[in-house]
Length: 385
Image (cartoon, rainbow, N blue to C red; front, side, top):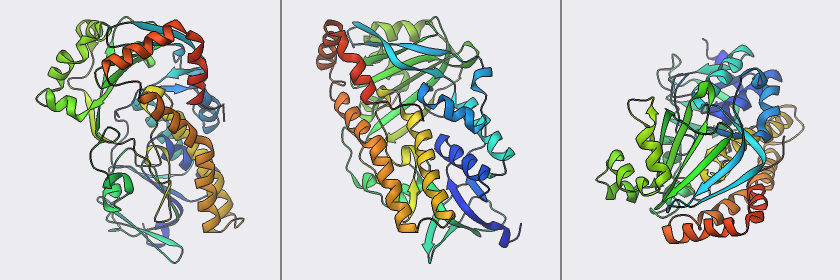
């Protein structure tokens, strides 16, 4: 590949949902697009693997035939307190289950088919902006030795990356606190659980979700504080037995399910602190722009929707209908219009989960006043886009 061929209209760092969805939109519009992904598809990610139905039509427009994939449609939410008390409600819109192993891989196939240059096993180490051009350097084992250039660069590199640290982003500077020092643990299991129900089981300083994905499997994923793991001698197994098992629903799941991994997929240093949607002229998408609390169940839809917002702004710029400053300002404005309120609501809800006594009281309140649940759920979700 020549240096001339390494110049792109759009370069995307990170091949998760937001990055893949943006790349497909851009390539379909005729823009020369490159996407960098440090892993190789297919691979597992720590994720709850429940997607709000607000994303269904958008994913089908990208080319993913969801209607033909026999996926579970999820209509009911169960929430349990650490003491085992259960609250159940219908989801206002509902969702569906699909593993990131399958979803990301299928979107990557679509991206390649529509002309995106997808570079797997390729880690971006730096991005420099100068005179309207981005230079992307030290990219894995790139044959160009870092010769990639882009008119626009978008960052969709997830919850935390080497670039976050290199750029010393604001959330990286924060000292460990209740918003920025979480760990995530995910399994795929076989178990007995209603296929149309997503359950969120709370425990001390954490919560665990379970819902069905493709092929009759279930995603079992939990989030808790790094302090909980430290108290458990940094042993995930001990953490589960001494803390999660105090919720009887979780003890039943963990002791009766068939676990399909030899070991769980894990991630650490998850931060829910505020993040900027623009860094060094790079547009941030998905979790790189801001993370909603997983208990709100809408992170994947937000990532997909952010790609649609970003594409509208990128398209206007590449069509010479917008300058760079206007493009950047418009994207931040659109992002905040769509998601800022959801994130604030998610943080507010989070305050009721953590301490067992408060969580038990909160769940009891919903059992007593069930009509309060639907409006609260709607505050963390959007409309089909």
